[in-house]
Length: 169
Ligand SMILES: [Fe+2]
Image (tube, rainbow, N blue to C red; front, side):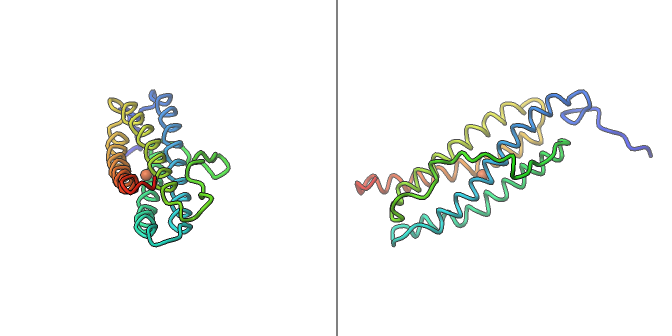
């Protein structure tokens, strides 16, 4: 049987332009996840103190989840005939997740995580909108990832509330 290329959906030859736009959005998502992995490693190790323990353990678990997201975005880039970008294309953006002046400043970390998750949620909603009628596979994948990010933000909003109740935020 001859090899045939797809003539339908996002993989169709005539959809090359739409695909290129989508790949750019997926690259951004991929780098967001990779930077989050870096920031969560940092912030799961630096904090000092008894109070930091729950945050540290929570972030340790999330590192693997965020790494999994990065790999999913990278795979989807390739499936859409794109090339997963190299590290030299990476530009850091997470100023809010840099180490605080004091390593007991857990509120800084909690607020940084909420900020990072909010950025991801915004971009993934845009990706879901962009693929709603054109690419059900990417759409489905990003919806599942969005759920993880929403759950994670909700968890950290709860941590922040606890600190605010105690008047430490
Ligand atoms: Fe993620």
